[in-house]
Image (tube, rainbow, N blue to C red; front, side, top):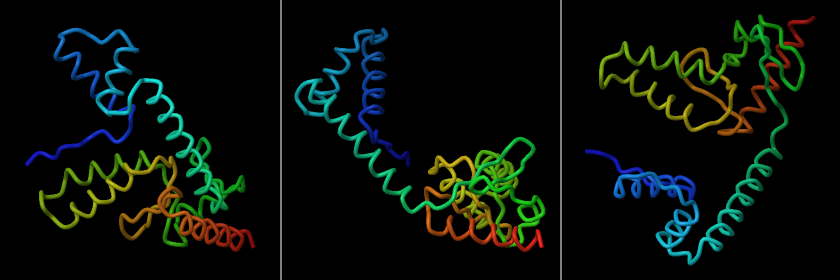
Length: 183
């Protein structure tokens, strides 16, 4: 059975509508005003001016939601050339991150996606491990975070956009392990 995926934003709806019009007409849609007006009519919001106002309101609300989510964020993680990890600008000893003393390591999301895709291709269709890895892939695809925490025992991930409280806890644990390592 094929799943139907509907556009979730005006922009993606407009792109889908554009593709449909182009396919129907057999030529590209060049007139943006006509496309905007067609989108407004399809969404039953009146005119393209009303649609533009609704889009602006939606973007403003999304921006405010992101600001509120970041209020609880105490830490920021970075990775500099050579794989050195930083938490709030503090360089983390590579032994702390690479040996994953706390059971988690800071990794690049894209690298983990590539690794999982390679591993999934080696597992049988329908196996439990493959199913769990697919769930982890779905989580990885759902976040925009470039860096995440990966559990060294399994494929669990913690990303600041998915669980800011757990993300903060792991940052604190790594900073504490790093302080102990310096002693």
